[in-house]
Amino acid sequence: MTAPVSTPSSSTSWEEVGVRLEVEGELAVVTLCDPKRRNAQTPAMWRALAAIGRELPGTVRVVLLRAEGLAFSAGLDRAMFSPEGIAGEQGFAELAASSDQDLDAAIAEFQQAFTWWRRPDLITIAAVQGYAIGAGFQLALACDLRVCALDAQFSMRETSLGLVPDLAGTKPLVDLVGYGRALEICATGRLVGAEEAVASGLANLAVPGEELDATARDLVAPLLAAPRSAVIETKALLLGAGQRSYDEQRAAERAAQARRLRDLAGIGD
Image 1 (cartoon, rainbow, N blue to C red):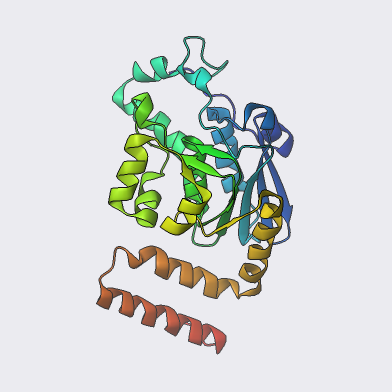
Image 2 (image 1 turned 90 degrees about the horizontal axis):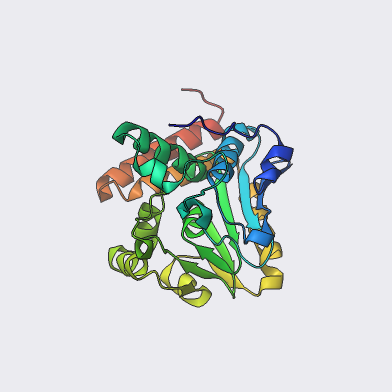
């Protein structure tokens, strides 16, 4: 396989591939900032997003993901499908010709941009306007919460292109809307509007576009107001609930509450 492009290590180089990071105390704002290309995604952008996840200050508690322009993200840059590809990147044809091990490693590297958003020490919010297609949809799904503008349109187009959604979006989609609806959304590639997104549990809120940023910020404030350790324990309880039986979940609640009570009382382990 060809050598990968070096990972951006500064906000300037991240912006060159369409991502900007701003840290405001306990809040980090990650902005997709290539509106002329409808925030189309590339492997370089994915490396930047993965690097941001690794380099977030430990003081950050909430991450807000937003995008400039009319579209949240139009998905994968279609140049990846072309014979010319993207300069410095492997195209799909070259990826397909690589060994099983190398192909698996390449996809695993791509997924790193989408996995850190569910870290137990963070609450992540996606503010979505316009199109969130394919990889854009999966990036929104990577977050814990989604606020969308009334013009938001989600679509999982991979299957219609002969591919599958492989950027860690299938599990959160099934968890949110159930197997049957998730299969229908993925297999048809149809658009899911803001009203349906809220009704199905895919999004938490839908607001007029001009209110999107303010609404997302309003959601940040109470998340930061709660004690961090309590939020972390609660998120862990809810994330694990689907894999536990009722009795196992009750036991997990008891253990978490015991930790909280002792912490509040200043009693160590």
